[in-house]
Length: 421
Image (cartoon, rainbow, N blue to C red; front, side, top):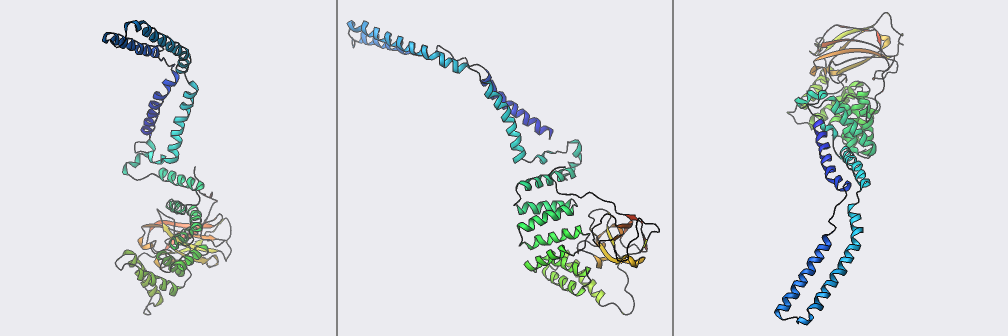
């Protein structure tokens, strides 16, 4: 970046060095140039007169008369040139400091403003910069990504009717794990493009992230609207099936999974995951009467209880969320279940049947953290005053965890979209 600005400054200096000196230096035009030219012209006329005399074209008695006429014209032209010379000389020799100062102020400023408006300042960061040395690997830094997202947000403030820009901003916020900001951007994009089913499915997915992975309320409404626009929209079908599993409607979930499976290439990984979900629902619907089924390898079991001393005593009807999330990466739950505080203490089992998304499950995770949280409002998104306890990081498939709810969720500042920080 430093090299770029040095080169830009050098080009500006060279440009100004070519423009300013003529404006600041008094012109020294030769004052005798026009007079000398006139004298040469009339001298040539005298030479022609002498040649005509020698050739006999002009009579000798007319020689003096002709020479006097040439001399008279020369004197008249010389007088005219001398009269015009002072004004011309004054105009040519007068410097223009005001114009020079105006150009000195405008040209560099205009160049910088045009670059900031039309160029891409973020692209100037190079691996040689001290704060961006890790870019030698070719991956953009967090500061670069944040800068580009803020630049896009700033542009959309002046150009709010750009649906593709809002979609890009929403997906950027989602990648930065700012689901609240992503939901606001998706809402604007959906308003501008209300008949795009894929866009509504993405919006529903982000709304579920805001609610901690729970597909209800506005998220479910967006899923239903997407399927009304396109009954074969793959992501909307997967989210609809997950929502059905969440509310315990296994038959609806099975119907949606089977519909989605028919749309997918048979040899794709997504089709294999959907087939596994269908098989899981079939196993739950028809258990082996010979005895209990063995737990899946990824299942996590344990028990939740309240600590002896808590900041407050939860009411019996408050909601208890027990969920597992990846120890590193997005905080979207890999599996989640709900109970009531009045049932504490209780045992739990988390497995792929409780996944919120087909591509985000315990069986595909490494180390996870299991949390139990009591919410007075019943909202899946953590809020100030919720009681919480956790265990981990642990490997998926851990058994007999002990989670003690002994903490409280503190207030957090709300992150809003911003063009600058």
